[in-house]
Length: 157
Image 1 (tube, helix red, strand yellow):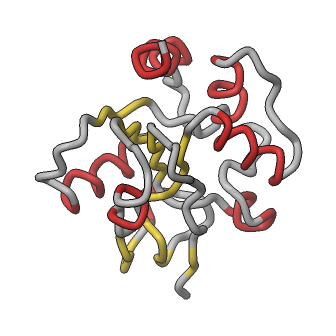
Image 2: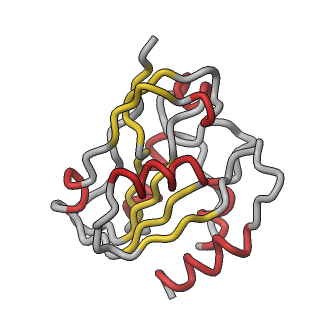
């Protein structure tokens, strides 16, 4: 059965796009990105800015827009078993022009290997600098917060 992801969060001032793979089961339940409390995304990104992770969806959106961060997933629709990226099939890829043409994106962070593989296959000639970072998923035992901090420091100074 096809599952649908979320619309991107961004505005005209967004300067970095963070792309995940596809929302987890818990994210789909709350209908927003990185809904699993064990996922390190919000703690890591908010922590970089010296802020606590927001609790509500509206506070998360406010944080992202205030910090000029756009958030989306490279897969907008797919068949998936649970939350496992390795089971994603029959997927539709995000039309990144939807965000890139209406913002100031100058760098793309790709959250994890599956998102990166799909991004590279779908956008091999995209001329915006990009970098794959280790997945913030709780299933990733090799997560490295300093890698995220280093890249965010390069973008936000």
